[in-house]
Amino acid sequence: MEIEELWENEPRDYFEHCYMVEQSKENLIPYPENKIKNFNKKIFINLGSQHFETSTLWFKENYPHMKDFDNWEIYCFECDKSKISGYEKYKNIKVINKAVYNYNGYVNVSNLGKMATVNSEDGKSGNYSKITIRIPCINFIEFVKNNFSKDDFILVKCDIEGSEFAIIDDIISNPDYIKELFIEFHYNSWINPGIEKIKWIEAGKPRIFDIKHKKTRHPHFRHTFDECKNYMKLLREKNIFAHWWH
Picture 1 (cartoon, helix red, strand yellow):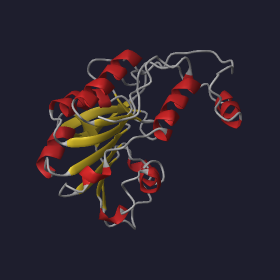
Picture 2 (cartoon, rainbow, N blue to C red):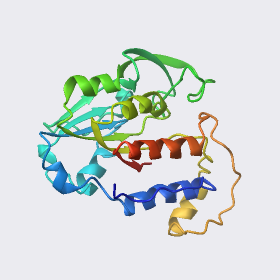
Picture 3 (tube, rainbow, N blue to C red):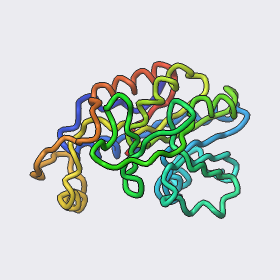
């Protein structure tokens, strides 16, 4: 598999984490175009889609194989109804107002209306100090297998605030379905320092990170960077074109 190299060492701070993802996008080696032509349909599944401009637009304008955007069959999952907008004029997009998980039913979500997070049963993701709301969820791999074929080209973007750990093993166990995956792993990273981020952006995202801020680990996520990196390697070993996302 010819694909961009993985970032091997845990980013030293929030800025380097962002740089890691930006480098992945800049050095992106996508699924080979000559192979996509052999599939029946082109499917894009956006997990944690929010507003159209949040991420779907990025794929429309930047993903090299989406120049024929109207010919793609697109499914956008977003558990927070208040963040769904901008899709009305696209007849090829179906928006599904449900959380994505590893079973059909309901999940407990905290911070709905802000950065909604499912409180996982293993206690490794979720804001357990906040009031939760019970919302419907869908079994992701079951949805894929019931609606699509191994002969379809399935592209997935996954940014679901920690719930990726609930569906990643199913994706790896069924490698013939998803061909390409952009995924943000919510590991126990250094937290966003807020206003200092603006200084970093204005400085042109330097490779040497010398902006001083208090390093605080994210309180809502317990998985480690090494776990996430190993998942990325497993995905690639299964011939899934896996890329970092943020």
